[in-house]
Image 1: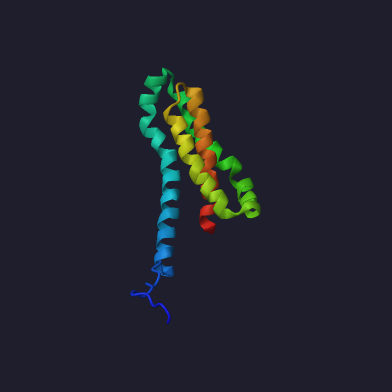
Image 2: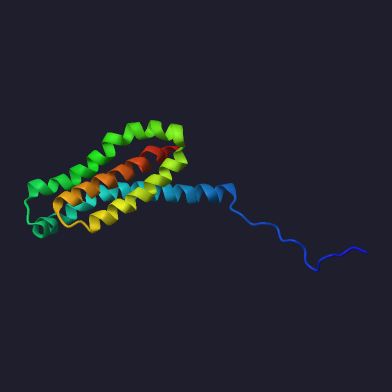
Length: 135
């Protein structure tokens, strides 16, 4: 005598290939948009930063320049490094480094800390941008 369960096993439901591609597209496009927005958002807050840090506009420009340098300098080397270590690993590492840099930017007490945090954010954005066309 054999035992038969009262219920039949249910088939697994999962994304089909079309749905998966759209989810991947939205994540990658969203991260690219946030990287570009991160560059331009500083211009909106520049007058408040001048007042809060008690500095002038010529020094606040370094906040944007730090991000630009953090993105452009490591971009090509990170593309090669991601070929060696894997694009997914580098993309996800960049997606973790960007919020860390943004948190550091938010808690910075002076202009030097803000510039250093923007370099960290730019480096994370470079890791994302170097790999987002290859996902």
